[in-house]
Structure formats: C-alpha cells, structure tokens
Image (cartoon, rainbow, N blue to C red; front, side, top):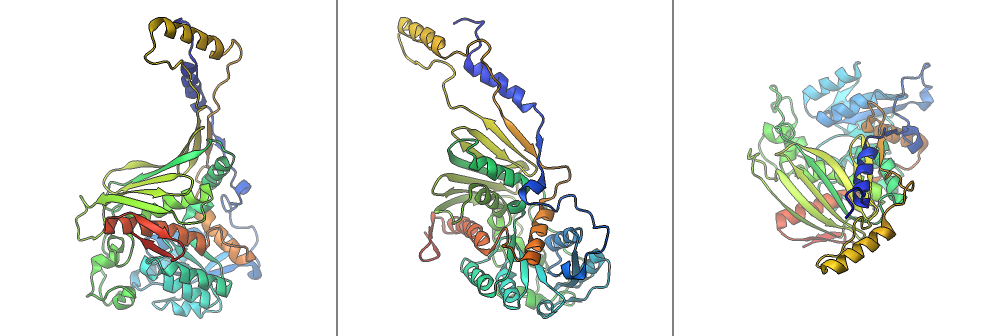
Length: 453
C-alpha cells in the first residue's frame, strides 16, 4: 500500500478532530418558545390584571429553589406559603422578603381567592392528593417530579386535570430546556439516521447527593406536624431521619428512579416524541455503600424496551460521573448534556478495503481496485460536519419551565408537561422499581393500566 496515500478512514479521523474545534452555535431560547431567559423586571409595574399570584406548598430543598426562581420572573408574586415545619415557614418569608401568610394547612391556600395557582414541592406520597385537591378547588398547580408515588394515582390526577379544566405541570425542567428542544429538532431531522439505542448516565459521590441531608437542630414534634406529614404512609413514631431523608424510603419516595431516572427519561421522551410508557423494563442494582437504614438501592441500571429502540439508564450514588444522554444512530451519535448538544457524524461506510482471509495475490488486486474506485479525488475532500450547540451563558432551564407554567396560567394554553406526559414518565420509573424489587422483567399492560411481571 502506498504510504503516502491518505485512506478515507484516516481522512475522516483527521476531519472529525478539526470539526470538534469549531466554535459552537449559541442557542436562542426565544426560537424555542423559552422566553424567560434574560428577562429583567419590567420598567413599569405589571398591571394587576396581568399578575399571577401563587402560593407554595413545601419549602424544602426543592421548594426553596423553585420559590426563589419564580420570584425572579416578571409579573409573578408569592402571596402565601405552607409547610408542616416551622423553620421552613420562616424560610419562605425570608425568601419572599415580606410578611406573607404562612400555615401548616395547605387547604387554606386552596380557599384563598387571591391565589391563582400553586407550586407543590412535597414528598412523593403527597403528590396525588395535593394535585387532585388543587384541581377540584379550581387552582392550577405545578407539581414536582415524579408525578406519582403509586401507579394508580396518575390516572386519578389526569382525570382531575381534565374534569376541572386546570393547568397541571410536572416539574421535570428538561421539557422546557432550549438544549433539549434543539436535540428534539435534530432528532426529527434525522441528524444521526435511524436510532436503535439510547444511553443515559448519571453519577454522584457525596453524602448530600445520596440524600443524607442534615437534620435541622430544632426539629421536634412541636416544630413539625409529623402525623399530617405521614399522610397515607404507614403510621410510625416521630423519626427525624425519615422526615429529612425521605427519599431513602419506599414509604415516601421511589429512590433512584423517582429522583434521578425521571430527569433522564423526561429528556428521552421529549426528544424522541414518546407518548406512552415503555413496553418492558429490566433492572439490576444494589445497596453497597449508603447502609444507613434506607430500603432503596444506591446504584441501578435499567434496560427499557420502546417500540423503536432500546434505552439503558444507569445511575449510581457511589461514583461521580459525567451526566449525559446519547442517541446512537446509523448516522452517528447525538450527545445531550445540561448546557450543550453535540452531533458526531458518521457515514456508515467502509473507509478501507475489507477482504479478510483472502490469498495474497487476490487480495492485492482487490485492494488496488477498491482504492481506485473509492479513494477521494484530489480537491474533492470536505470536512465532516460535526455540530455543537450551546445554551446561553447562565442559562437556567428551571426558570424557563416555571415561566412556561405561569404563561399557561395566564393564557390557558396547554401545559408543556401535563399530567399525561408526567404519568408516562412516572410509569417508567415505577417499572424500574417493580423489576428491581420483584426480580423480574416488568411489562406494561396498557389495557389493564397495570405493571405485570
């Protein structure tokens, strides 16, 4: 073989390396219907008729963040807060920076005529009751993910949303992300050809990431309404660890699938236009490090079967890893991260002759003929067009997701992540846990609306 010749494989390798150094395209949120980014308070007060007044139910780690972000949006005002722990009632007033009414009874917010909508950031076992009560009271509601704690709850929530004509939005912010919107566009354009496999991974390596949150020093049966907090969960004596670290227990949450799979699956469902739960799920994992009394695993991998491709989701609380979701197709790879999406193009062709095990003379003749017919002609070579798109600096998908919710409340336009979308994703999370704890393949029976082994 001529050592001076540049094979097509080598040319592709060199071109790809050059393409990766090309500057990224900066995404414009407004082009994808996400207009909250960069908004400052308007120069004049928003007319009272245009303002959205909301209450917040649950001001813990997530509720605090949502409250703070919502208050950055123009034309939005928090007028009341509810939490069963006194310290978080004080926190709500500190964030709002005015003496808003606070209570332990969320139904007081439902009866408040000054409140247009609610943000509910409570443990999963309270999601269904609060969403249904909000809808029945004529209030729109933003509910944190995962939508449900038990499978049957989702259909009750969908019916309450439909019957009352309310806006229900589930809080998986990737549904509003400009990065994921661009990935959806690229997927629909066939940028990577036919997709057969999707891989999504996430990893943490610290106590807080494994839900070992610090217990407030003043937490007691006097500062917390423990009995109300238990709600539909099994009754038990006051336990500060269960309240603080509720994600560690099946009585209140869904462990890794409900807390972390749900983000990855939301992105996949949105990008690929998936409108049903997966057909099957098979999980493996275990509890090897965080043996603190929890009854959920600290690492899990689930293989999902969808009609058009397979999905592998892997999450560990034991090792820090880069988080990404990548779609693998016949035309290359599309890798999506929080703030960028990249397409690594592949042409799926032979770039060198492939004739293994042929006699020497026969192979030499074939190789020479192959190069004559397939090597690029002088002046005809072009770089492979790998693509990269970045979110704007300081982009915040949470802000866009909340903005989309408040805009739906104002305009009565459909939610970007309604109860049906949220339920399909929640079912996928329940299937992962069903497979893990039952040690079987979880099969979705759409007609019966049940998971079967």
